[in-house]
Image (tube, rainbow, N blue to C red):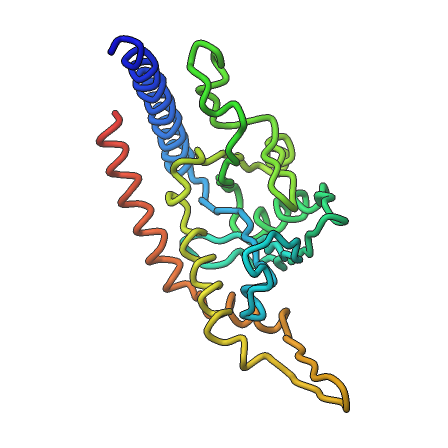
Length: 251
């Protein structure tokens, strides 16, 4: 029995330490965000979502086997006032296209400054390979909620760039991604694509084959347009309630 109990006990201790670290990170993030909000910073959430080819055309080519298919990534931002008045970007990513757009964050910070003044820009942190290490192994880095840069698939978010425009960059801890209303916005967009892709489809036939063209840009634009400021307010109010709950629970 002791032979089996020791690994089990060790896993319980590591999990408890890991949960404690994540709660500490969440509380630090929320306190920093509230302080910035009280200081007059407007909160905007910047992020990306993936649109795989199978979602666009409604077919699954895998047949149980792994098959590399193109994926589009959409980069946009929003908050309680709706989408940020910024031209969102859509990137095609495959094995030949993996470069991040370094200058895109400069443009976004400029637009956010012009539209809202100083902003707290919240970006969802990506999980790291060493995420499950104990507090002792990671040291003080375990408590940092603002890394040197947040690297998304298509954009690099740098805190120094944000500060140069009067903004502050905050990294939302990965386990608490639902504390961003962007999650609801991306979900609504994908459901719109699923339910309306046939209306943005053109078909052509010749003597041998039939072809299907999907107006992806128009489909995505219409889906984003349907997520109006009213829906954004509902999503941000829901996030606000979760924030209040965690501030009360973890404090």
